[in-house]
Image 1 (cartoon, rainbow, N blue to C red):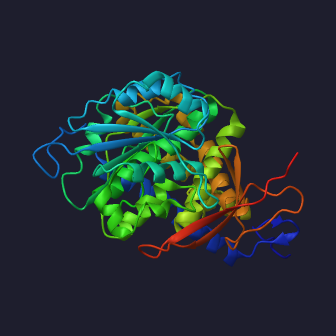
Image 2: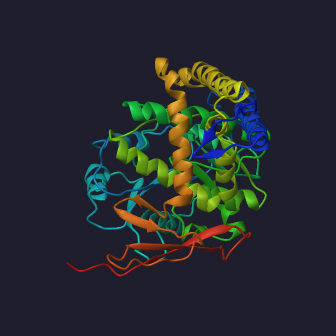
Length: 432
């Protein structure tokens, strides 16, 4: 009597033993590399960083600083964020620039009414361009309107502590430091935001700290980032922001490629606006799509070496295999334990607690994998009331029914090192 094969048919086809063995090997590699990287990052990250004392930078006194806040739409904080920004305790001369794309922008109008009498504050309306997002256009206009040797960019939804700017400026203690940013920790208020916090706060924070320690930090976050003017102008100009949605990633890529160093300051808490799953999904997809444009290889590795999905696929290909099932269980346990340690050692000192929600880490991993895959598959992102479209070859692709507001194409940066870039062209709008 012929002995039955231990491999069960899937979809009417029998999985060959060699395919199952190969799948197990790939899954083992994903578990070791994916979880091992985060474990190594946690070890290298060390304890949470305390703010450094502000020392003299490039002179006997703290240098002049210009703080730029791009505005778009109503101020959801009721003026609290702007007041916190103006209340920074920094020893050097500080000027503040509020910039918007329209003179009647609600955020700009509210800021002018509240702080128009402050001599440190100026208000600017940026020029709308076909090849630049409104935020990037505002950053470019404010950069050119100031002469300070250091320029800080702070998003309108960030509420800073009184010493956050001073802590970032203290890290410019060496001339090759070109950019400093404050990692943002997202305060969760909904189930979806708690899932997002495990990856967008915990994993991100230890990764940033580890990369900085080994000298490989090539990213910044736009919530609060400070740039040395001389360094960016040595690589070209602020015009590198044209044609990109990810202004923070673009600046980091340009500065790091030119040989300058980036640093991460003390983390700051970011209270996210309450929004549903769809809103957070669009936001997360935008983050991943921007990473797809600026660092496509890194995003591809996150898919190929996903420590949860890859072993799960191997188990589905061979559901009777104990080895495949063991890999899935081992990866889940490793990841849950790692998340618990990160939450206790890195997030709790900043006041961010996840508690029993850590048990939903596998769900967060699946959502992250879906967002990474969508960054390759879905050719558009939604941000600030506009749609940005990409195609697979990063070339403009018009619609036949309703033309998009923006069509997106990648190009090479005209100034500075050869890096991936993006170019926007506004399509004609449909008249009602």
